[in-house]
Amino acid sequence: MIKLFLTAFAQVTLVAMNIKFIAKDHIILMLITGFFISLVWTFNIKKIALGDNSHRLIYAFGAMVGTGFGYYFADYLTKIL
Image (cartoon, rainbow, N blue to C red; front, side, top):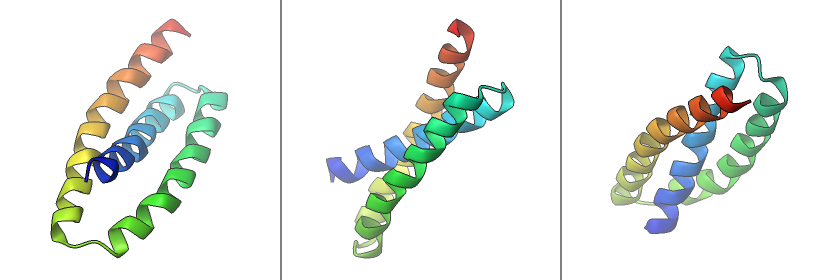
């Protein structure tokens, strides 16, 4: 279950970061996060499609936490770049 949480966290962290990079015109970072969003998604879809409702809830919780983390981490990166 922790792996599922972490992969959801990773994917949505990247999505939140990607949005921030798009808004701030950081093209290279936008492209890199776009690549990794799709790569992580390929691993996640298999886990969720074959999982039960508890897996879906853990995944959604990881995505929620990842959204907040991704926003603040991307905000930090865009300020130092």
